Length: 152
Image (cartoon, rainbow, N blue to C red; front, top):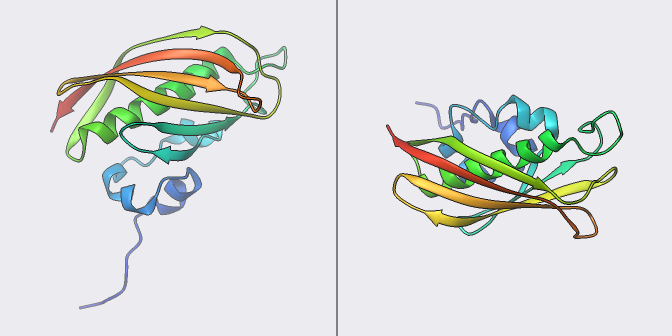
């Protein structure tokens, strides 16, 4: 029998996205997903009370040079879904059933920081408010996402 440690197959992807090693097994089979990687989303805080990640404006802009509105929603859905999965725990799957977004201000440079905070953490549904801010701390957009928890 070997005492060698076998790394998780998605370790590199998970670490690049800021996912702490102790959470790798929970995200196991799926990692963070190709879109999270393409958008440059990196998690900086993961807890039941707050899920935080950053995303660069660069490479996520519309033709006018400002952050694409859909990029705001991608960041919000990523944070809300990960927060719901964190709440649901191992052995559960979450699926988004509703999301909305209000855009308040444009961003053309820097990093956007999204913070998901729970509005409702139930047995079968979660709802999170996700606020995106620029480097100066100004609110760029506000999203609300509701996820359904499916038990395996």
